[in-house]
Amino acid sequence: MAITPDRITTIDHVPGTQTVQSLGVVVGEAVIGSNIVRDFLSGITDVLGGRSGAVQKSFRAARSAAMEDMVEAAEALGANAVVGVDLDYEVLGEKNGMVLVSISGTAVRVAG
Image 1 (cartoon, one colour):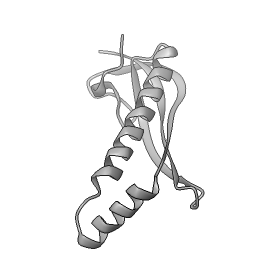
Image 2: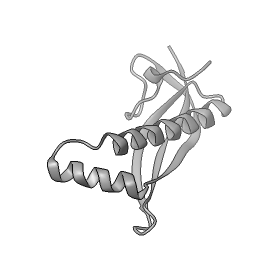
Image 3: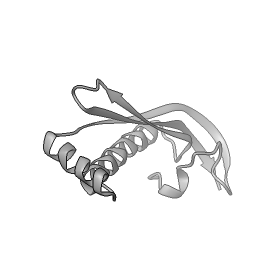
Image 4: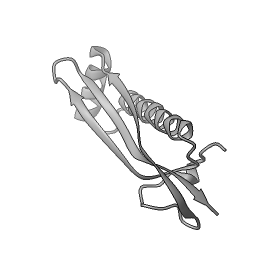
């Protein structure tokens, strides 16, 4: 059974279900880099006000990839849910402009 979005939660349980087995910590990671053109354009957007669509799109894509990796790891363990999900962003060296998106949680089997 595939893990659906309603079975991924930041709290320690899936509402309306009972956790029957904890299978361990699962992690998904994605690294995104920024390029000089996007940095320049986002700088202009920041000065003029507004949101940087290109940067936001990159972060959404990285977050989605990390989430997919975490869910795949959970499903490989036989989980049908992930609880206690935490999302982190980490700059990997300020000069190279790389950002690590890391999502972790506990893979569980739930009934209900």
